[in-house]
Amino acid sequence: MSHQVTLIPGDGIGPEVSEAARRAVDATGVKIQWEVAELNSDLIIKTGQSLPQSVVDSIELTRIGLKGPVTTPIGGGYTSVNVGLRKRLDLYANVRPVHSLPGVASRFQDVNIDMVIFRENTEDLYSGLEHEVVKDVVTSLKVITRTASTRIAEYAFKFAAQTNRKKVTAIHKANIIKLADGLFLRCCREVASKYPEIEYKEMIVDNASMQLVMRPEQFDVLLLPNLYGDIVSDLAAGLVGGLGIVPGANMGEKHAVFEAVHGSAPDIAGRGVANPTAMMLSAVLMLQHMQELEAAKRLHQAIEKVYAGKKNVTPDVGGSASTTQFTDAVIAAMK
Ligand code: NAD
Image (cartoon, rainbow, N blue to C red; front, top):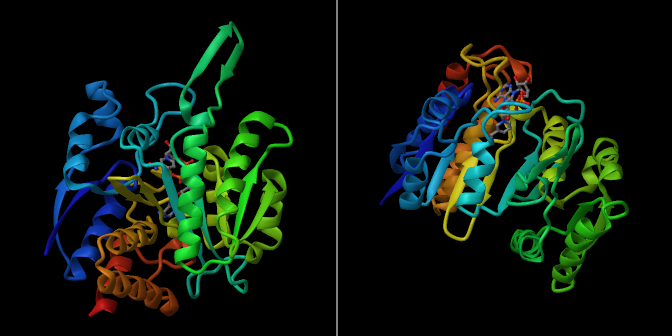
């Protein structure tokens, strides 16, 4: 059977790591018809459209996307296409498994870190509702709804139950943001009450940040509203060796877009040294979603084998291999 997938190379290191992931997926033998959809800062500036209809149309058709990062200008300019795409396709659950890889030099290499982050993906301070009340006075609206909070909580608990996870920790700031984060927590508690076999905990986001650094092994499934989920994801990536290795999935009712946690990394773009592991592991999640379980397992095991060998890994994780050398090694490890 052949699958159709929309491949969005993105910009910065996006085209380099997307090409690596595409090669690795093709090497599994799974037949994929790739529909390449351009979405990058040059195109956005040229066309004035932050989310071209052609990209949305392609994912509407294929229902599955594998996406590289896209740059968002800071403090002005066009709005984030990444946020725009997630809202437009209602990709409400951002799922980010964070676990150690063999041989990666991180400060926590002796700790078994194995957690999954569930970040609400459509609202919170990412509503884009900002307003200059009078000169030099600005408000940004944090939108939290029962619908969105309940469905991300249900997604996280359902996943925990299906994968035999033991604990879900909801992370919040309801001591200060009483109404918005209070509603998020109420929804999490209601869903938690339907899963008595799973331990449910709550933690204030500042304490959670410290606990993640001091005792990361205590965390299993993390459940967060959008902004805390964004920040905590990068923190968690730092525990296991950096952004080069942490994958992600944006899941909706109808569509799924798989993309790494990292951004376009302009500091290393075009140098051929970007680590494609995060994109490849995002592709592993994609293959699982397509029920290509054997191929997903083979690609995952090949990546782990290359890490265990230490020789062919990229500079961000302590090696000296290029993006292409790492990719070649992964493909060779699958044979
Ligand atoms: P970033 O994730 O691009 O980079 C942070 C640091 O991690 C940099 O030092 C970078 O070199 C390193 N890094 C990231 N990915 C790597 C990889 N695969 N291999 C090796 N090193 C890697 O974050 P940033 O610099 O804050 O953001 C850059 C741009 O990316 C911004 O415009 C931001 O808006 C955008 N962004 C896009 C997405 C997305 O498309 N989903 C996500 C996050 C950031």
